[in-house]
Image (cartoon, rainbow, N blue to C red; front, side, top):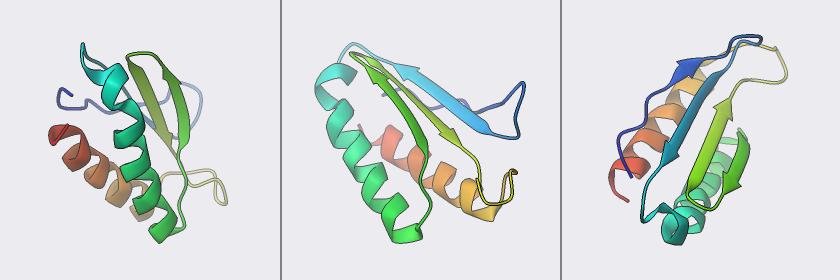
Length: 85
């Protein structure tokens, strides 16, 4: 998986990342599971979209409608997880 490039949301205060790769379809569930386990530990849950070789993750803190330190911490974990795929 290529290094993720985070982008600010156009209509909401969110960080989003989208990644595609030739081997991603076979690895997507493993990658997503790893991120999901970390998110559960943090009690902070991303919005997901996955179709074949495309994974999109959106982070925001729903309770306050903004980005928080939890979002940044999870984004850093996602970057590391993506780099190891």
